[in-house]
Amino acid sequence: MYARAARPTVERLAKGFPIVAITGPRQSGKTTLARSCFPGKPYVSLENPQERAFAVEDPERFLARFDDGAVLDEIQRAPVLLSYLQGRVDERRRMGDYVLTGSAQFDLVAGITQSLAGRVGRVELLPLSVDELRAASLLPDSLDRVLLTGGYPAIYERQLEVNDWFVNYVSTYIERDVRQLLGVRNLLQFQQFVRLSAARSGQLLNLASLASDAGISATTAREWISILEASYLVTRLPPYHGNFGKRLVKTPKLYFLDAGLMAWLLGIRDETHLGVHAARGALFETFVVSEWIKARLNVGRPPDLWFYRDSQGHEVDLITNTVDGLRAVEIKSGATVASDWAAPLQAFRERCRSAPTVRPVVIYGGVAHRETAHYDLRPWSELAFKDGHLD
Image (tube, rainbow, N blue to C red; front, side, top):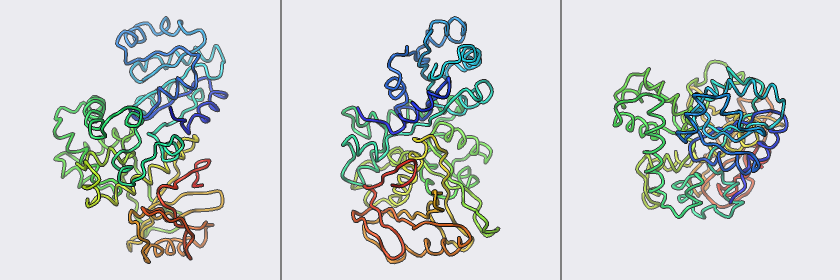
């Protein structure tokens, strides 16, 4: 068993909200976290057909069974319960009364907004982070092994081959759940879309190009990307504008939220293949960006992350906001330090003279941790966060 970094956030929210909702992708550890935080509460999975039918057909009687609240797993399977929970928690006025988990934020957030506004403390739980794997002595020694494995807990809990896990994850959850949300009839076309999206992780999101390559309309591509995002498979990273005027890119970048899933979708099956694959740099960038997002979500904060690119092609991979100012982050998969790594960081600081900035950092695929004249050099294996910021 490993400790989840989000646990203190769940426990904190349970002291101030009658309902705590833990959302995230399938198999990210939501149920395990909920049950470990609230071991005394009854647990009900709404994936169970009998429980789901009971909840949908007679929600009042379904909830009446739980005098001391309950953990209701996969609540999006019975969204009718949300309206009945509102009256119940308003009457009881108990903090931490009910704990909800859900895998599709599209449905769940809509229900929370409409029925439970002001009554829910929400935690978004992604797969295991480097911090969590390191604390559990599960962090692989090899960067390429980390990129291939990703962070889904089941891979580390069971004696599973990574490729066996992902082939079943994709067929069971992505192709079933996401297709169900979309009502997709052409499975092959949808599979192609997901793989084409993986090939664009770390790039500006060009929906017209993606739609053309997938053989669908731009409107359909926009809808499908939104559902992949709502299912916690991808995210869009917005560009940083500040007060820099109009000479900046306004298109977001697309990122998968698990590098292992991305690698599998790209057909990368072993470290030898990954070592020479053209997407290795994009995989590493995806991995680092997702680590930052996990760190922010685990403490209950919005990501508040951006990238910077101007019309001249100057680009910084990640911009974060610290208490002392903006931090520019470059992400390099290579293990050898190159002299040109400092250029985009210096260009950004020059452009940012009117705003406070802190010392930039380069996260890279090597092993040394040191300060250079222009930035701090940090190896991937030493990624560590405190209160949502790089430690």
